[in-house]
Length: 325
Image (cartoon, rainbow, N blue to C red; front, side):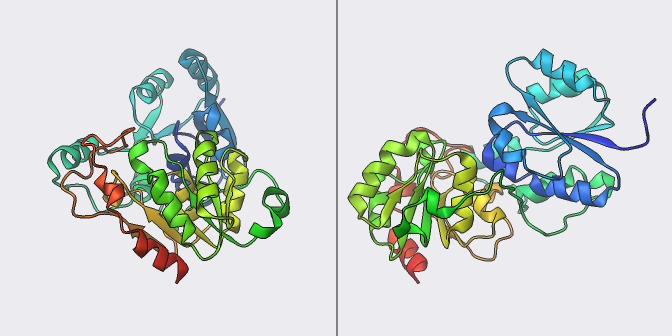
């Protein structure tokens, strides 16, 4: 016999930033509903983003087989599913489990109109607040405590960085799509003019670019790209004095630690509702008057028009003056 304890499954498969942006939903649910048992389904590769979160009672992972995943989830007898991903795969899961569900509205039609006709009919609401709307039927309200990121381990700065770089500005050079990244020569120009030690952050795919940037920009720039696990990079973000970042997952982790954020926007735009959330200092840098922007709701590997003005015309001097000020 099922007890009276409410048991809810949250679904968000990817990616780092999107998962971090769900953290207020987890906290508000857990703190505002007495006795709630909260489970979370994501991809195995994103386990480090969630494994230390105290608001999650159990993590479930989708790896290779949707059938196996559904079979495991059926054993849990959930009362409700909160679908914050809302795609075909989550529809299959919800249908197979046969329990009540609430799904996040991704506003894909409105985003399509903005990308293709440059007409903005999106609500002026951050995605976190739209995520929270999905659980409002439970009486859950935004507690205005911002984002959470919980480190999995305890780290020492001295073991991750050289002694010369223990007081630094982090520069996140990576992003999943090429049109969300400053070109290498512009990153070199930016880093070379920062009047503090600089630590470059990114994944293994950014390591070679990071080495070239560090060698070209000056001895005050240290390349940590590809040398750290995600959680260690998050720790370096936490210990940073300032964070310069593209529109990417580490930007949202920086927001969770309430760091001063200098965000650089290429083909995507803050109006999509994924700008740094509830931070004390957030500075957005973009080329606002381009008629071709946004050219995608996610990004391309290269500029569709070939000129890449959204990054090539970006005012680096304005970023440098604000960071150095």
